[in-house]
Image (cartoon, rainbow, N blue to C red; front, side):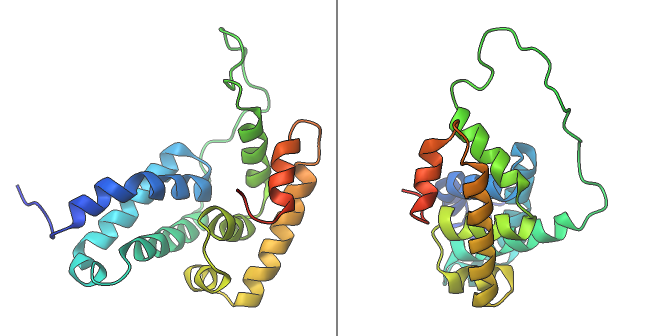
Length: 175
């Protein structure tokens, strides 16, 4: 069995959890996030000798962002969620993660471009220049999309169920 390029297996083993979290934040769907990461790694593998010499994680992130953007333009949008979830036996179906649920709903309500910029800028902690390079737009567009996205998130999180998340976003950068 082919072991692949030197260092690729180790990179995947060590960086996949962080990259999977980023993929999930970009797609807001666990299955799509796994597919996105797998696709990005599969596209990176043939170029690993060149990529490994530079910044491999940045390269994989860029492949993920571009792939997620291309997937957004697909005709089929996936399953349509039900307006009302069925009753779940066993108590609280959120497992006490109300803040995370509210944040995910607020992120899902953002347009895809704003969500990408907010996730890359504040979750992945990339600079405006890095985000602009990944998304393929100007730094000014990153600034305006981040501002609009944060404004919409603050408004969505202004309700009584998410005061902690609103405080985190007040500072502009999660802690």
